[in-house]
Image (cartoon, rainbow, N blue to C red; front, side, top):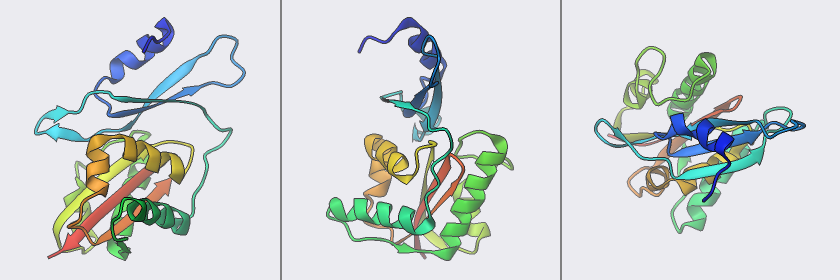
Length: 187
């Protein structure tokens, strides 16, 4: 893929992101793109998957808000389309996801690590979820649940997490352009 020099230079610092949402500013005389890491997942301890997906879209004038019901339907619809059973919504995992989306919005940064250093296991535990396994996908997109699902589905590590057959419950939350999906199975 040949990228214009200005876009290549914009993406250069983001080589550790698994997904990148490149937004072209509407009405700009010359395209002024802003690359934003959308999702990252460690491939192995201390390593992060290399950049593999670039989304070229116009940013909407305002963030597309999706209801919890719409988000849950999109996620379980995607699982059904893959031949998997839908997951049950968990109030505890929903709170863990919401707390993390809120935190990322406050930090104005997408990360699997909270502002207090917490990770998904600690956040699920703090909400009273006794887990055997818990995993998390995060995304940053102003385009709503369909975009978040598309980005996760295109990233091999995030797709693998959503395809797990050993999880039973989930929570999925949005705060502005920040998304958190937490999936788990109880002890």
